[in-house]
Length: 268
Length: 283
Image (cartoon, rainbow over all chains, first blue to last red; front, top):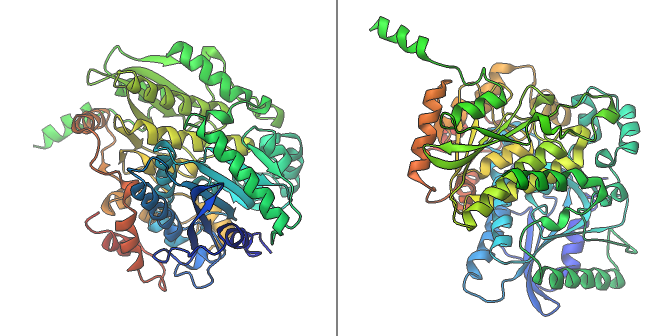
């Protein structure tokens, strides 16, 4: 069972959003609600499974055409509503996305453009002064993660084998790189950016925090308190920081990313 | 008349046949090309050699500053011939870093504009998570820069533009394609692997071009211009778009329009090119 089928995203959304009424003019595969956290207005956003999704390849929590454009709408509405406000609501993307939707309809109708819609909205929200946080509670795969979470000022992950960031599933990655799955796994064990586990991912310096929880699939009261505290810390941290993604550049396993920028600036 | 056509054909210079460095040079005003972090900088992938893959001295990305129609510009060209144009840590950082500096120029009063030559399968799987992270940063930088100046993407072919970089293409102020171009999120092999051959036959080239090729993307309003494979035609298209300035609203901001159209699609039947053109009429 995938993390999305376990409905991790939905369960964390319900725990965090509490009694808040979900917005109802969005695709059924999205849950979006406004609430308060640490005395600040926040909007929680999750992509969930929808067994009657009109697009059959997007029924297991994948980010497809409706989900990409729907996220864009949900984020854009927050930007518009807070345009003239001093305090702009934070956007918290609850990330449990097994993949983008793979299908003929998706390619034909331009799923790349739908996902660009979501990326666009999250990035503009960040630039407009909304704090954006990605909370990884399950899979955060490839294009789906780019569209839902990867534009965040801060990324927070739960420590669990089901929490996983990657560019492509193992079978497809093996096919494209002309390797067997065994060979791919052997390489992944020694090359940190290729690995599928969270500790290797954390070594790349992209996460602000990794949290231990008791029940990753259905949070306990203590889990909820711990995650809310971490979100609160991230909000305070973001308030005093630049709105760009520079904070991701410190790790030894990402040294080249920083070095390239330094040399480019010198030659610019 | 026939003579004139022959003369015109003889005068044409193919763009798709050029490598990344030649493409960047061809688009910048004559004599203004200056490459940053050129191959002599020897900034190579730290991750490929340990997997038995020979790295390249520019990691497959050319960043060149210069002028376009007399205005300051940076052209970023991906070399499709190296590892399928895939983006790893170094190449990805070159693109993100150059776009970030162009945005900084604009904040400081220098109106640097950017052209992206997209010839890429997306993330380089040998550097998976660092490629993905870099693409998120490239996307952030496009959205930032296009607030000031148009960011123009061009997919010329033959590789096309896929994966996370197709999302980056979708963020550009303007997007141009040739007949050789393909633009889509998921590569045909990956879709076939994930969804089966009935859903997507990766060997059926006419089918794939029919759905994701430049002509279809243009006819469906998913790109802004369909250009011939000719250096002069492409230069003049770029000059025209830069002269026009930023679009009233970028395509990636049109969620209301696209959602309305997608909700009207009969998803019980499989998609084909004609249905998409009809659904997106007036885009």
